[in-house]
Amino acid sequence: MSEKITFKELVELISKQSNQSQNSANSFIHELVEIIEGGLKNSGSVSISGFGKFELRWMNERTGTNPQTGEEIIIPGQNKVIFKPYKALREDVNKPFATLKSTVLTDTEQPAVPEEDKSEAVKEDKTTIPFIAAKTKQVRRSTLSVDELLIEHENPHFPEPDPFSAVPESEEDESKPTPSALPDEEKVAKEVQEAGTFNWSYAAAAIIALIAFIILFFMFQRMGDSPAPATTDQTEQVITPITPDAIPETEPSEPPEPQPPEPQTELETVNYTVEPGESLWTIAESSLGNPYLWPIIYQLNGDLISNPNQLPAVSDIDIPVISDPDNLTEFEREQVALGYFALYEWNRQNNPDEARFFLWAVGVFSPDLLEQPPSEVDPNDLAFALNR
Amino acid sequence: MNYKELIDKLSDQTGNTKTRTKELLGDTITVLSEQLSRGSGVSIPDLGTFSTKVNEERKVYNPHYDAYIMVPPKRVVEFSPAAGLKEKVKYLEPGDE
Image (tube, rainbow over all chains, first blue to last red; front, side, top):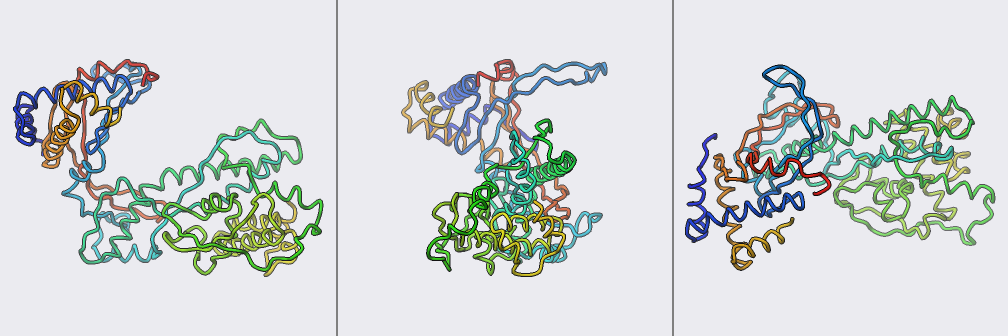
């Protein structure tokens, strides 16, 4: 493995491959090297398709120790040349190991588990269909008013449950499906690997968002109604301040009068095919114009989507046609509220700590529905929702 | 610099047509990849050394499954730039890129 061919041998091989003299192959490589160097200097990166990309990366100043004297020294910032192989090369090089899959270990102490056990463990663990990697909405910084603060409370709960999205094809994962036995188990195992490689950053983001939320929550409670705690150092806040909250502000002042002359009874829907990487949240954002309307899709497709956090990839779902997402009709609002209510019930079973926020959202979209809930609700949750 | 710019420049300097340059570059890449996938290192003067290394299998925790996962071994390409190249680009301002 550690053998190495000399440059001379390389030139010979290349000249043979391309039917040219060794001299010209030699000078070709030198020209190439010169151009790569020039490209690095001028633009910082050189991409060679089918092979890889050379890049400069700036390394910040750091301290290190002189290994001989044990002294601390400062290593000044400098550029490093890095090479990123492209997929074709990565696959070529990894060929000997391409058929290996990652496996779930049932017993953490045991380094290896017999094949069947592993597969079964995987199956038990998650038998769901084309899988879905957790993905939290990007966190972003924002300056906040009191109103927005309120919204910030609710936010972590909306983006978190939903934006699990269908598995994106993994760039890293070069494993080719082998036509051997146990294709299902292998697939699941592969999914596991994908989920593993992908979720770390998202999981971290989710945790940060949650912590930020908790801190905020307590601060807000303490502050009561005092003016905007602009001092709070919200390092990370989850998501857009465009919210369903903005809508009720205008509505409640003129209660149920402005109903459309003909009350709708059914939503107009169109068919939609879920692509890998999409979630209810993103679909609502792109198709309905407001991501907070995503429960309406959940409501419409209750039979297909059992878990709102997991959207089966490449499935056909119905999505409603909403003409003006900023100005919903009474009927549409009610449907969204029903969607939130369904989510409330789902969360009561699966995520009791956060269920009440969904109930609160029901009230935001349709106060009537909150007063006469379609089925029983927890009195504590109801009090929470009404007090908001 | 993208692939197209690279081919443009390379054909300018070598006096070959672009098609021919693409062929030559393609052949070079083929040979390099072949050598690397055989597991042998290749060093190119003034540019650096390409070599491969095997990342041993390892155990990682996957929070989604709340379980440990054995990631199989993998062979990857390593590149270490030649000393001359390193020095030449070392102190370019990051803004120049």
